[in-house]
Length: 336
Image (cartoon, rainbow, N blue to C red):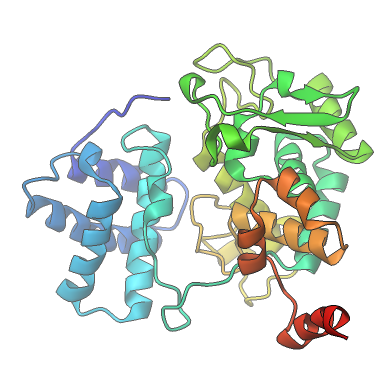
């Protein structure tokens, strides 16, 4: 794991804005500067927030409550402000100024009245992405990441943990291992370790990437990451931004469903803005799409559970898209 290199909160905001100024419009930079000045003001008023290393999930939750009350903000305004904070924290993850995955713990309110959004990648959108990457980005790093997430249904952390040696092209499988002492972890720890079988197509895509595209790099622990950056193993934040990019319709040649002109859209192709494009979804939404499709194909839940490392209880709670009438009809066979 990379060691945190803290910096003063105001300097962290200044560095972020300087970074963004090369990639977005001046108006966008000014908007982010306005929203983040409240973070500086909040930090200056606390004795327990001196540097970015002091930021954690609890303090960011306290900031959320403080900002809502301080600005008397509506849900929409709070959503906008916290989205910028989340993008800023994601940037700090990339430069090792805060703990990894801290941005995921920022509670950004949804715009449907505050209820949690039941996010799943639409089937037709998933198929469009899959077709585009197979045709125009074949065997690239992004294509391999997408193929593992969508074609296998694993968590982002599982894809991040893979080494070249975890891929067996002859047996057509991936092996997921929990290696906390070597820089990568699985959500469910050692109980998440498992082999996963691969289709002919997925095996060929990964093999072609390794043989022809993947740079010859090792990470800080001397391991050879399967999904490789130019010099080391990409961070989870980097992989997450790859997902954000390719779930934007404009990036796969589709029309913008939000009536935006790509040339005038700050979110287009910009991977640091997870909510800048309404069509963007998280890696979990891809996993949910895959598990739902497995169940629709009537693959036994036990096999899905083993493959995707998900319990029956969680599948029934989050991955059951049947209507109440359909559930009642399924029960009928047992009571008639």
